[in-house]
Length: 127
Image 1 (spheres, rainbow, N blue to C red):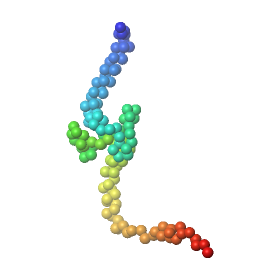
Image 2 (image 1 turned 90 degrees about the vertical axis):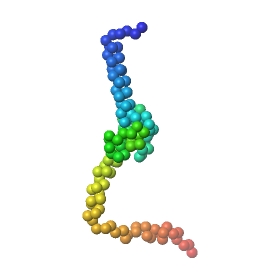
Image 3 (image 1 turned 180 degrees about the horizontal axis):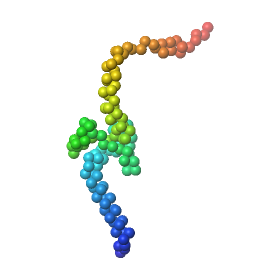
Image 4 (image 1 turned 30 degrees about the vertical axis):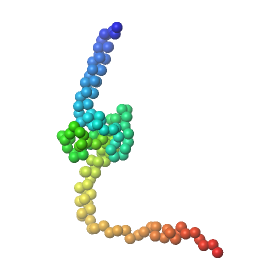
């Protein structure tokens, strides 16, 4: 027969709250995505376990956080690093395009550092 002392009552409340929070998280798009997809980063392929699952994020492909179809078609799981890189790419692209358009058209390189490599690799003729 379990004792119902104040410590057990407090512990029961903590466990009940943790379960309630877990159920609430499962209803979020992150919880849904973690149920739908394998715990692998969609870019670098890194695998995740319950110990490091906090490093796996849900990326919205169309960047609209209100677009959360139940089939997950607007989501992809990305690790923190790939998710940051994805958003940096979107922020940097206009700046890169602006810089490129302000320059002269790029000309191909005229120097070939390996031009004489074939001659250097030839075995010397022995007489």
